[in-house]
Structures are given as C-alpha cells and as structure tokens.
Length: 286
Ligand SMILES: [Zn+2]
Ligand SMILES: [Zn+2]
Image (cartoon, rainbow, N blue to C red; front, side):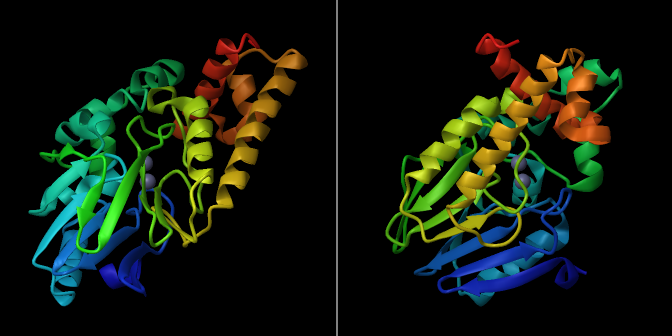
C-alpha cells in the first residue's frame, strides 16, 4: 500500500519520500539526509504506522545509527509520524507548544473564527485523526544552526502559513527545504499563522538566498523562482478584493465569492480571505 502512495527518490546524498499527490490529507514529502552514520529526517509525514516503518527501513538501509527529526512546522501532515518514532524532535520555539499539545493548533488555524462564520461545530483534532493522525511529541526548540555530519543547516523563520514555520537552508550545498511556503500547491495562510503580510515577508527572505534546488514539502522539486509566482498570486488576490469593494461588494460571503467562486466557504479559503481583510483594514483600505 505504501509503495503506491510514495516514491522513494535519491538526489545525490539525499533520500526523498515523495507523496504521489501534493494534496491534503496526503503526507508531506519526507527528506532523509544521512551523514557519517547519522541522519536528519525533515518532516516525517502523517501519523500512519506504514509511514513510520518506511522511514525506519530507509534509515536501516542507509546504515544510520542515530537520527533527529526536524519539523518545518507542527502540522499533522508533517509531524504526525514523529509520534510513532523514537527520534528526538526539533521545531521552532513558537511551534514547540503545538507539537507537545496539537489541540492548541486551533489557535493558528483560527478555528473559533471559522466556527463563527459558518455557524458549525467543528473539532480540529477529530478532523485530523480521521485523515492524517497527529500525536503529542516531546519536541525541543531548534537551535540557530544545526550542525551534524558534513552539514550546517540554518532554519529560517518564515511565518504566514503557520506562526513558527521554518525553511531549512544548507548554504554550502545551495539547498533549501521550503516546507509549505514554496511548492507545487501554494500554502494557505491564516491570521493566526501570520497572515498575508508575514507570507510576503517570508517570500522576500527566501528570495535573497543562493539556492540551486528547492525541496518542497508538497509536490515536485522546484526552484527559487517559485517565489515570484506566489507573490503574484498574493497580489492578484488583494486586487480582486479591492476591485470587489470598489463596486460595492461588502459582505464576507460576496468577497469570498469574488475571490474563490463557489469554493469560498472552504476552511482554508475562509482563512485566506480573512488574512487579506486583516491586512487591508490595517492599511486603512477597508
Ligand atoms: Zn502546513
Ligand atoms: Zn503541509
């Protein structure tokens, strides 16, 4: 079953477990970086037993004796399987509390707001557990630099999608693990994750890096040029909302429809819209 859902691909010194689809609730891609009998595991994926077993079997094959899990952020499709493994887990200090108690993800997911707008009862953990399980993990704070084997890896704080999201940069190899920030599917963003303003700033941070290859958490390997495309999407959304307001559109539903059509009320689309509204209010444009 696993063989059907994941491709195991080798890029020089790196093993990529690439999910067949970049779409939720599929696991994020997982990257295993072995060096001198040690390994870093970036984003182990959803908390399914088969996933954890697959990772352990790759580690064994690579002759890895000791490994550490690094999370780009504490979402279930990235960290779930960490709860089924023995390894130490590192995540940005802002996300440590979410890793230790995933129920708290309700805050950055703005669950209360979505409940209010749609007038529905919604339990985030129940939703996760049915699709992509997540378990509490005794995570520690990422250091400023991770040094192991031949590598020096720099976590770069890149909020917007999630408040303590990091991209992982290996300067010497010109590699970037972009997490959810750059990839085949553009990440959603929420006021609780930092919103559109932080997302923009995060894109700018990445743009300045000297990078040959971008390894995203979802979809195919990409390049740093992806920053431009995502920035265009953000600008386009802003323009659509402003145009709608200009012709007299006022309600959240109508603005949502102007932006996303019939899909305006999906969980993530609501959060994207709300992020833009927060920013436009802040800029005095609403
Ligand atoms: Zn995520
Ligand atoms: Zn993700």
